[in-house]
Amino acid sequence: MPNRPGRIDGKVALITGGASGLGKATAELFVAEGGRVVIADINAAAGQSLAESLGDDAAFVHLDVTDEASWIAAVSAVKEAFGNLHILVQSAGIALTASVVDTSLEDWRRVHAIDLDGVFLGCKHAIPVIADSGGGSIVNISSIAGVIAGHNMAAYNSAKAGVRHLSKSVALHCARKGLNIRCNSVHPTFIDTPILDEHRDRFGADEALSKLGRQIPMGRVGKPLEVAYGILYLASDESSYTTGSELFVDGGIAAM
Image (cartoon, rainbow, N blue to C red; front, top):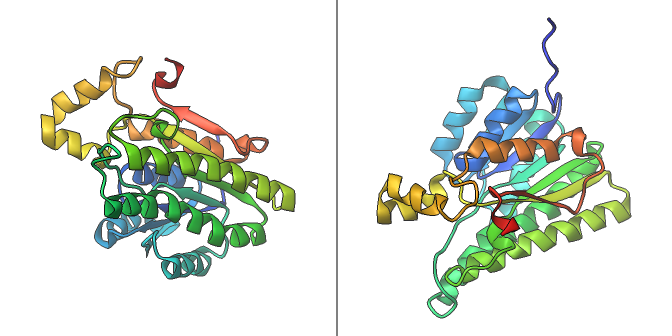
């Protein structure tokens, strides 16, 4: 039986936050599905190690998503490594558990700088390169917290809601300009990644996952690969008529 062709054969992807969590799972899946990936992360050691483990179809670039010059250099590095750019997955992000009155202005700005400003900069600087490469897909990782608010997640709710709406604006801009670039957002609920470390430290690993899982209709925390497959769909040509849309990977929580 002949080998099944990969779902993103020949496509080049830049994945932010690619050294861990959802970004790492996505990078591994993309390479398995025929893509070439540039893992972009502020954690150089983990990013370089992952790229080396994935072989010739992967490379690493250091990226501080809050810094415009770093973005310009990263996009140039993708072109140097693989010639083109077809897919941008923006997975870099941090969480903050605090109510509006307990959030300092410094923390508010830091969350927005990483979770929202970084996404803006990525779209701004990747769009021309993706267009020159013949078009492609931008997948921005928001959160179910960008749709459903919490009393103690003011900054995170705000930033992730901003990613949701920014993605729609980007989609409409690209469609209006005829750039052949789609842009969609993905909205996970609790996923078993390092972003839950705050809860693990507080309750212990097993109890943290159990407590979070009880809030979800499906009764458990999600797995990174379950989100990565959704990202793969939006990155691939299978979603060629999908733009400005949202994919909930949330165990049913948005249906409550």
